[in-house]
Amino acid sequence: MERWNRGAYDWLAVTSANGASAFADAGARPGAGRIAAVGPATAEALRSRGFEVELAPEHDFSGASLGRVMRAELSEGEPRRILLPLSEIADTVLETALRDAGHAPDRVTAYRTLPAPRDPDIEAEVAAGRFDAILVMSGSTAREVARRFAPVPSRTALAAIGRPTASALAEHGLRADVVAEEHTASGLLAALADAAHRFAPARIPDLIDDLDPADTEGTTA
Image 1 (cartoon, rainbow, N blue to C red):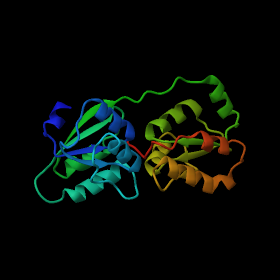
Image 2 (image 1 turned 90 degrees about the vertical axis):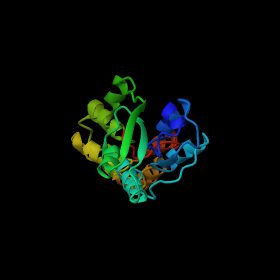
Image 3 (image 1 turned 180 degrees about the vertical axis):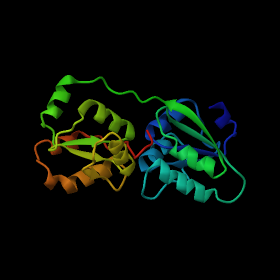
């Protein structure tokens, strides 16, 4: 973080609340450059650590959307040096968009996303169709859902936090039955509630009650 703290970057672009926390925990100080966030949960995580967020997408909280709004904001003037503190498994959508616009994104691994240990009992319950819905919160989650649960029983709905996550499911041969238009945990809950009449009701209320909506946007992880 030494280069950020001494003002070597014009912008910081953060794509998750985890990234915001990791960046602050590494010793980054506010005021060294301008800041863009992928969505409201990420912006709130940054503000809670004293960072002022100047730019964020209005609706589509994804890396692609953040790339678009940053390209529009930076369309005039000299190329900018932009720090991207990302998960090690994040895709390259944001950095590619910025580089293609002539800027100099500098990607660093801010945190690592590790899958939870496999649970044979849960996998057996999913295979038996005892869950009405699986909430898929990111591209990395989509990969794990496919690895652990495919083929998903037809009676179990897959609910994706946004279209990038739905696309990640499709890449692994799974179809999202519900796709949130607002790429936040709250948006996913609302989309699932709207679609709940299409599914058996046994487990959906439990899943909604248990989900912590404090953090997750349609990240690139």
